Amino acid sequence: MTSPPLRSAAASATQRSAIVGAIFLMATSAIGPGFLTQTAKFTGQLGAAFAFAIVASILIDIAVQMNVWRVIGVSGLRAQELGNKVIPGLGWLLAALIAIGGVVFNIGNIAGAGLGLDALLGVDVKVGGAVTAVLAIAIFLFQRLGGALDRFLALLGIIMLVLTLYVAIVSNPPVGLALKNSVLPDRVDFVTITTLVGGTVGGYITYAGAHRMLDSGVNGPDDVAQVSKSSVTGILLTGVMRVLLFLAVLGVVATGVDVVGAKNPAAMAFESAAGEIGLRIFGMVLWAAALSSIIGASYTSATFLVPNKPESKRIQNWITVIFILISSGLFIAMGTAPATLMIFAGAFNGLVLPIGFTMIIFVAAFRQHDLLHGYRYPRWMIAMGIVGVVVAWWLAWVSFGGVFALIK
Image 1 (tube, rainbow, N blue to C red):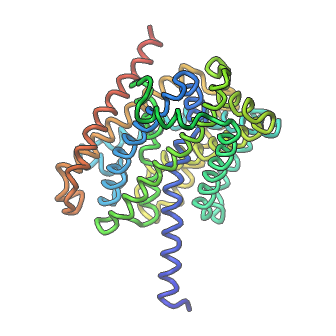
Image 2: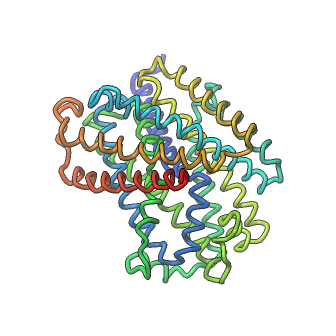
Image 3: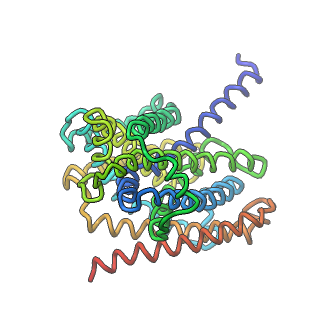
């Protein structure tokens, strides 16, 4: 029989692994196909001045995620459970918005995986997307693979970081100019900043890491230090990837190459920097980004539909599999998500952050006595959160502006 100290050590190791998984789930969920294209395009448009937008967005992201992780972690409740306690039905509204956006954007993620394998191995896009979807399903369907989820997410994250670092070095970017513009920019574009925030902590991404953290058993006022450290680490990992990708593209842009008008700005930048090897690296980075986003979107959507109880774990995995099956089926039928559908899904995602984050800050400010178990929430974090709420509603306005323009 295993002695109590050994069981305790094993449980602690499992918990640490799950926390690492939560950190990488949040980070890699944010680094999807859209992240790569968005970063490359903005770098082409703004050049070195894009560095300031990255720094500003990271600071806002930290303000959002520190509050989301802390409120969810201290309460021990998932976002939809918190929402239903604040206003009956609010949690289910959030769940519906995330589920709709999650399915549609997963079509884009699966398409991105197919494009990645095409660039990497020359595999047909539909075949590559379907194979990736099957791999994602296997991770949740088979217990042994599911147990390795956290390590697998960490591996995907490390692969993306290392490969992008290589291209960033090869492209030889003007690092000094980028550093100068990070604090004294030649140009400030607030729409770009808010777009970056929406892409990093918008929609399901807001809750991916926090919900995974609850699954690991980390919750309650006693775990506040661990929760805070994990939330900031996840955002910083995403920021590091954004910076490396920015530098990789900046080196190419500085030589006069126009990536903005390219069909795939990131692919063009990688190929221009490192030739055919660069294109293969881009394929690997895109595939890893797409696979991690498929896992993140499907897992997080499922956590919004089942209670946070050990006995619900199996049901949650099956719902995750169903999400992937629906998304992959639609991808095979359509080839990719139509632009109109993606815009409407973006509008749904645009509502998730302001509605959910307003609820989070309300709980932090006014429900400490019951939902936060008497925990005294730091006032400075509430103040940071209020700034985040303003940004979130601005993002929603911009998001729905795209829908209105489409209708007209």
